[in-house]
Length: 507
Image (cartoon, rainbow, N blue to C red; front, side, top):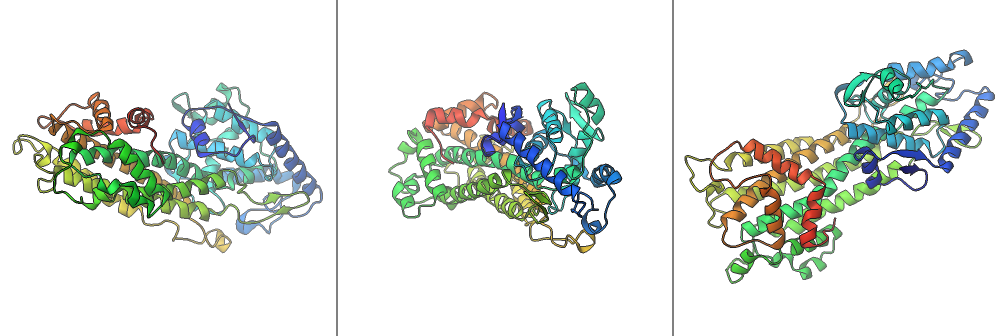
């Protein structure tokens, strides 16, 4: 049970709630923050002054006053009219992260929302009622208005939700879980949808996967090192101490651990190989730079997790309109992170090419198959990796450099951060497939080096792979092998299994 408001929300805790279904509860401090904020807005409303989003219209309609008897209808109309997202629905884990992040932001006590409204969202999260939220429709400023509206739609008993594995009417899901639909009070609709929680949630789930991938990339590369008879000279600690980027130092250290006690390496210590191709020799520099980028992005997202991003913000004596809903900090970080992850894929594909290419693979059979000709071997999986690398280059075009004016010019610069986050999410998945293909190739190549054995880590990696994927003696349905390799590296226990042999690996 995670107590919201006790400590700042971290990436790891978002993952625990979103993916592992950890339940949440408000701390006493968070509950008091929410109550005080609601009292402040009620006090402000008593003065009968125009307060944006409370007793005025929205966006370009902010100069239109709304009468007291229509204030509740104003908030419901806001949600109904803004629930216009299109496209495929977000994954369940992303939706759970969205809900958690919105609860956390509201718990800080500057949004003017009521405690029952926040509790309704908590009850939905704890009962695993996941609103159906379309992926497309946010421009990433004035908050993630369209997708967050679909979340609130379920809170008020409208729209659709996923509940116990089925997509049902929101009211059915709420009633089944014993939750009463919430009636929105003045300011509440706006407080719930005016924020960056969708782009941040998508980015958070992708980032956690990317951080794991940055360690998986070292693990898989170490097998390729063994299989291609690479030298470990470029991993010398003295080299990296002269260029002390944290990620580079950590990657070199990881590879030294992973590459230790290799019979294959010992067998060619006296060979004339002074230096390897960049895709092997420069792994610490390339993988390390991506790690440093992801570390920076983690700091940006964790700051955003614990920020108040709606509008107006409710202070002691007034409601102040500002621009905290603008997604630019997250948008830039998403563009940076997807480039970093794409580069992990780029260098992996070059290693895959070296593994199958007879001019580069140090006397291994072409395409890693003994009887070539009648068998194509691992020829076409490299095509797939190349295709994914090329697709990533297109996905890495920055979303944040674009802007389109909305709301009749009132919202004349937007971040497109949610588009950037969605593209980051897709790039991460593509690169997992690239590393699955490298793993398939490198373990096949490692076995072709028999009777020599790879490092202690390589032997364990080979054992893990062989539990699901047999050695390739002739052509077969390789799609199944790629999917199995993808599942192997996506398993949360994969890194831990290798660390049990190699020692702790650093991000």
